[in-house]
Length: 405
Ligand SMILES: Nc1ncnc2c1ncn2[C@@H]1O[C@H](COP(=O)(O)OP(=O)(O)OP(=O)(O)O)[C@@H](O)[C@H]1O
Ligand SMILES: [Mg+2]
Image 1 (tube, protein in one colour):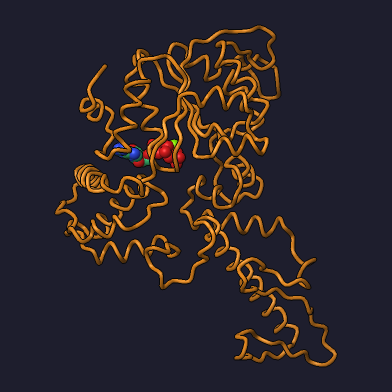
Image 2: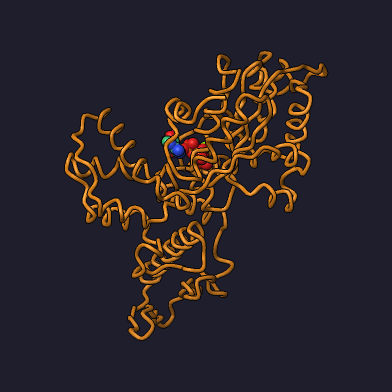
């Protein structure tokens, strides 16, 4: 057994909260034993950091840690990526190829976003977990690998099992040893240490003078909910340091920048219009859809103007009324935002829209909104990352992406 201090120093895992100490304790217990581990927790809570620490403190630390993002590999090639393939087994399979499980032989494989694995592949994962056995795609020969598996997810796997999207047997096999990472909200006391560490690292490597955060600024940061957890905090610290160019970070700066990032944070700025009953992501997508429909409405208005309608603003509703000019055919259908927060399209507008166009527009805008962060975009649109990748390619809304990280 090794001590906690050394573990923290070597793994870089920060924190003195009870929550993170429990995680560290788990790491010390499970690392030396060759069992599979499931790491759960919200986005940005440090699942990958933990997976790396487990490998680092295991007997396998001189061997490779192969990181696979199961959510980012297209469904059609995931088995060939994981288990390899035989030459000619499908179009494009020019050579025999090793999969990640073979590459990780004697080492560790980190299956990130395990909840995104297709059901058929899950059967094969269960087999390799239980016996180390697998087959390359297009080959009948059973091969063996000696791999320690660490899996991670920010999904509720039990829920996926209930919905039939995740195999129960694989779930039971995986969850025996679970390391659950607390959200940053549940370990607010660690925020000081995170700020200091991230600020020092960043200013040092970017030659920025560091004068610290004012106590009021830190206090404010502790009140914020950090839905993106440690990752969001880290990026935030880096951003304000760049914006303030070597000045001390004040509460005013923090307030300004936090209001900017997430205008829907209820607890933070109650004055802003938000959809309180909905989750963060849902509220964001609602906002984007609303903008989208407003845009469509504007376009229609302009079209109508062009065919010769007169426009009279009606102050009572705030909406614009179109007065048709005699003899001119004006399309009567229009869309309007219905303010109950759930219906966006007036019934008589139905029949006018292509889902595909709306989808493309929504994806484009959501990507933009999240600075091209595909994971957040997928989550907020309620689709899997894989589906998002496919649609991005299909619609050509972003540059081509790689099939693994
Ligand atoms: N306890 C911690 N100490 C130091 N750094 C941390 C800690 N937790 C998270 N981080 C940092 O926060 C960022 C996000 O961590 P990580 O990528 O491990 O999160 P994750 O849980 O895998 O997120 P996602 O679900 O979005 O993949 C990284 O930059 C990581 O270094
Ligand atoms: Mg991760």
